[in-house]
Image (cartoon, rainbow, N blue to C red):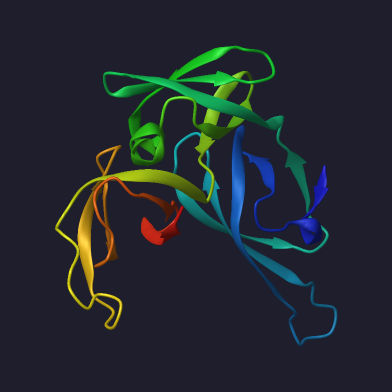
Length: 187
């Protein structure tokens, strides 16, 4: 059991028989005598994907989830699903739906992922914050692109498009921030 005052962003706890990850947390101390500190949380149910809010008192006890993060890798796409392998047990998981659709633009075969496993089932899938991808299609380099902050659209090898500086050309490898789908730098 976890004390509510020990909750922090990224921690996984169990609520209604489902693993939930803390997205945001705020502590509020009431001014009245004898008042308990309130802990307001915003969390995501990893089974349903719902984002919910709940307020706990500082002394409340919360169940820990039987949740493990393991390193894995993307093997290949199979229709609308992706096949992933746990690097420790070599077990393979076929994952589809929103969990796969949200990250498939950042995955190359053999790419590293983090698998969140609850009761022998993958309930979360995360890619690194920065990935390196090759530009396959973009407009020609713009003149004076280094003097002004001009951007253009570029299609990457996985099919996603990002805004890149005007001086980049097709065939260059770039670093992309997976949280915001934006250009970071040349690789």
